[in-house]
Image (cartoon, rainbow, N blue to C red):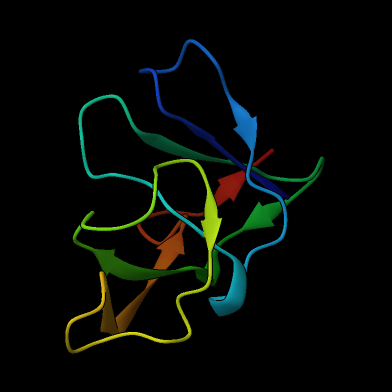
Length: 95
């Protein structure tokens, strides 16, 4: 499947593309920012490691850009801790 994000409440959706610690996508925790997963055709089930999250305090970087978060913690804008979100974890999803 593919991930998409919006920074304007859903008016414009942008493909997230490839991301990693060295090219993390910055998304703010606000009312206009959303993340959407579009499963491949005929997908049925759930994904236990759909996305990895790291906190961003917004002291550096701009929402919607990719940055290197491999240096993190201490006084950086990025937490050293991460968490993994599931997709379809509360029920099986069929498409």
